[in-house]
Each structure stands twice: as C-alpha cells, then as structure tokens.
Amino acid sequence: MTGSNRGADPAGRDRTGLDHSGLELAGLGRGGRGTRGLGRVRVGRRAVLGSVAAGAVGMVTGCDGEPAPAGIASPPQTVAVTRGDLVDFTDVEGEFGFGEAVPLRYVRPAADGDAPADGAGGGGLGLVTWLAPVGSTVVRGRPLLRVDDQPVVLLYGALPAYRKLITGCRGGDVRQLEANLRALRMGDLTVDTAFTPATAAAVKRWQRSLGLADTGTVEPQRVVYAPGPVRIAAHALRVGDPADGEVLSHTGATRSVTLRLTEQRRQLAVPGTEVTVRLAAGAEVPGTVDRVGLPAESDGGEPAIEVYVLVADQSAVDGAAGRVTVRFTAQRRDGVLTVPVTALVALAEGGYGVQVAQGGTTRYVAVRTGLFAGGRVEVVAGELAEGVQIVVPR
Image 1 (tube, rainbow, N blue to C red):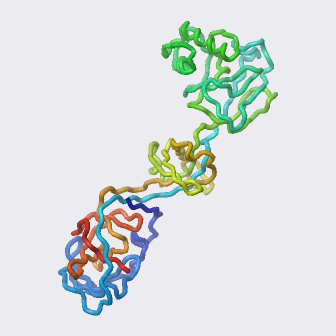
Image 2: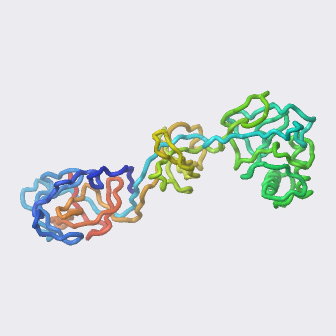
C-alpha cells in the first residue's frame, strides 16, 4: 500500500506540484499532428515531471517503436507498472486528554431545608463534607461527593435524576434505576418502566449498603447519572462550602484525542471512522472517531468542529499526554495500476503519457491519471498492464 500526506494543489500547477506552463514538445506545436485522448501520440523531446532526464533518454520519434537515435550513453532506467492500494492521508494535530469536562451541579433539596428523606441522622446545613480527589476515577455505585456526610452516588445512564422515585412511578428513569440496581447485584429485578414493591426492596438493600436509611424511595439529590466511569477534572467548591450549583467537573475515564477540523475537512471525521494516532514518542496506535461537536469559532475566527477520537488499547497510551498527530484517510484506491509520478510525461497536446521500454526500443503511451499519493499515481486508462517496464529518470 502506498500513501501520502498532501495539502491543496497550488494554483496554476499540476497535481504533482510542478509548473508546466509554456511546456511544448517538439513536433506538436501549432498545426502539429497528433491524437488527443488515449490514442497514439507523436512527441519529439521528453519532459519528465519532477526532474529532467537530460541525456538519459534522448530523442524518441513516436509510438511506432522506432529505436532512439545513436549516442545514448547508457540504457534508460526502468521500473515495472505495479498493481496495489493507493492511499492519500491527511494529518491533523490534536491533544491527548480525557475529553470534554462536564460540570456536576448539585440541586439543594426543597426550600424547607430538610435533608432528603433517605438521609441518616436528621437534617443538616447542606454543606460539602467530602469530594472525590481530582484525577481519581469513580465507577458505578461509588460516591462523587458527600453532603452533610451523606453520599451522592454515580450511576450509569443518559437521563438526569429529575424527580423522586417511589412505588407506583413509571417511566424511563425507573428503567434506568432498575438497570443499575441489577448491575450492582441488589436483586434479581425485572428491568422495566414500573417502580414496583420488588424495586423498593432492591432500593432498600442498596441504601443499607451505603449506610443510608432504608426508605425504599430515591431522592434526585442522591444520585448522578453519567454514560460510564468518570474522572474528576476539577473542584468548583471546597469542603465546608454550601452544596449548591456546580460542585465539580468530570470527564470520561478513557484517554482520548481532541482535535479541531475546519468545515472543509468535516467529511473526514464521520463517527466510526478508523484513524491512526501518532504519539509524541513516534509510536502509532489505532483509534476511532467517537463523536463530532457543533461548529464553533476558533482562535483564527474560522468556524471549527471539535472531534473526539478514542483509542481502544488504553495500555498503549498509558501516561500519554500533550500534542499528537491524527492521520485520516482522505482518499483510497484498492487494487489499481500505479506508476511513479516521475515517470509521467507532459504531452504537448495535453494530458500525460509514459515511456514504455520493450525489446530495446521505447515508445510513448498516453494515460489518464487518477489519485496521486506517496510519489505514485493511479493509471485509470491507457494501454498499460501490470509488469510492463516504463522509463524513469535516473
């Protein structure tokens, strides 16, 4: 497989980055004869893209296989036309971390100031009495903080805790709670949308495991839902502060890469796209685009999109931090004929050709090019086959 990392072609230059303005091969000026497209062409002097093979090729009279004139110091250098995969890459710088920090807000109980009904030891002042340390990872069933020495527990789910759950309640938040209770082995629950006496019994077992009064009801202040384990990013309050509003912020617990793409490159980062992450030390690990944010103004003023890339093998990036490079596949062609870019000849009547070497003679063959990548170019049409020898500059 051949690949490259290219930016946009400059104006007025061909796909190889070389300026061929004013290039005209002898024998095909105005009024000269020759066929356009992929037919046989007649050329006088050979202009090689990337370098000029002065004296190495000499004069070739046409496509009819006539031998080159005498006086060539050495036979031309040739390579075979090959078939394989051609990949064009785009590299984007990113930052290793744990993703976007999400604030955790604590909503004080009802205005009467009473402690939640499942509290132990009566009412309190509603003060923060403990916070999970910054940098620590909190998993399902463990406390993120304590208010009046009562735990506020992490559970997994997408819905926030927005109401008190008691026997008789129905809804998606009930299903979410029951799924967590089952995962915590608090009973062989049927996970559904109904808060039944069996649900209340499981809640009581869970409350006793936390040192809470076993009321069988769940107050919204008692739990916080997140998609999975979280890592504590920062504290917004200190122990002793009133627990109200933002208390701390957290991220995911999985190391990931955050990068920014312009709108023009947005198509590169479709969720699920496989990428390669090159670490600062030079090692490369596979990654996958996890999600794509909304356009936002960047430092340069141009709207940019935040992209989050996950690395499945976390052991390979343990301790990794700082700037990294994410390689996206911009274009790919599988099983195509390719030749070196330097083998291309700019034809006077337009387009490109290659010089085929066979039986001690050479002739030009017009070709139509496709993808350029990694110093090679795809041949999409032309009288070429795998293994044919073509001339390249020395």
